Image (cartoon, rainbow, N blue to C red; front, side, top):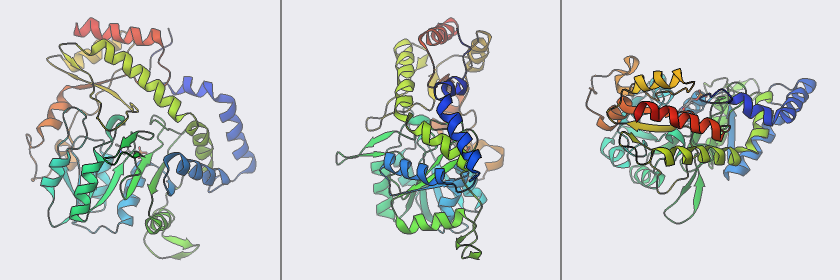
Length: 375
Ligand SMILES: *Cc1c(COP(=O)(O)O)cnc(C)c1O
């Protein structure tokens, strides 16, 4: 059996090696490393895939979130509502820009931000909502966009984990994750569902003015070279990464299907397990399984992780500490017990290997290794 990884980038690469190697060699040969034609082509292909008017490539997902908040001209002290159960990047840029992160709890089954909790957290200083499409399925965007419209708030989707997922709107139409809010932000970190061979990110919007502003901010605040209209940042996707992403974008749906097959295998194995709860599917979103995350009940989760490791099965805890209990984000507004669902998930979740290359033999071994510990 092939060694099992949380994410198997090497085997994935080997299926597209010739094409990728050729594309990288071409970029090197024509030396247009920054802003080369590959970047523009990738941008256009991603716009077509997502049915979004503008894709603005940038250096990573954290930058994408920051550029989004800068483009919306949020001011120090403005409140930005986001989920307490997420990766730190979401709150980090809010804090960096001296905005005020306002955390809210998540749904116990989908692990995504709870729209009712958003509504309760709104104050006269609230300016934006950042729903995170956690682990690969969309937060419930219809009610979130409705709340935003009623309170005149911006919505920035943190789509780092759900590129390619599809949300079914109340009116019957469908939208890709990241294209429903005013801005979507994503990451092309190697282990994300659409990952490059280094760092990368992008912003999505249907709004021409916002698109122009985000392009300007990502490029040192200039639209004409050496004329700087705003304080910006330097945040670019390089041409080698864009060339790789162009190839991987063509496989994205097939990659999501492979992840779903692995998830279905895990679901079937653990659906009726007394001490493991399988991840719930949102009724109105497809799932692209960035992570396959179980909720344990009465099991020593770190003991399980060790026991799996001893059998050659990696497992990870995403995330062990809720944002409001992270040292850097401690705030007298919050204390233990404020976000019971998040706190409970942080104590009980464990994620199994999830990627595009898991074969039947590996899946069977992972399942039997989990059973050998959990019964
Ligand atoms: C990965 C990730 C980010 C940050 O992306 P980087 O490219 O690593 O900066 C932001 N939010 C979420 C939810 C993520 O998973």
